Image (tube, rainbow, N blue to C red; front, side):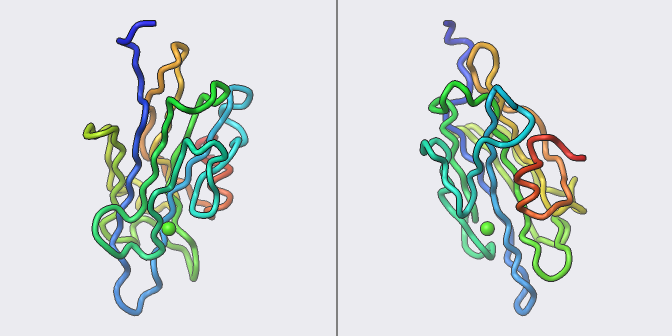
Length: 176
Ligand SMILES: [Ca+2]
């Protein structure tokens, strides 16, 4: 094995947004990761990781969870230890869903949204969701295990228009 093919090992996805103004309904954004196995890489997720669901093997961790966007630094952050994922896992998709309460809330309604994907001090990608302002959810990263076993980051921010629960099931398929 050539070390030149070394892929991503441990990445972090960090999400920030500004709280809604005083008196307005709170904006609750959620990071969601879905894992896929080689049997069904674009179908049903094998498992999901989000605010009330953990990774069974501890490889994907939601380190920080916010329901309002208040505070300094990232409001939500997730660590993915890709190199520790068992061999059947070949794809992990990470998305952001906006909790829908009264009416329809899109990225355009939320101030200063920002997502950053990094490995150590290396920034791999970042986005401000301006390209998906009309969407209620979006995929932000797709990690794929190549034939040589190395994990790579693919894809860009893609908008969806679904509730968080259905988004988590559908996000691996791409927008319909
Ligand atoms: Ca949240």
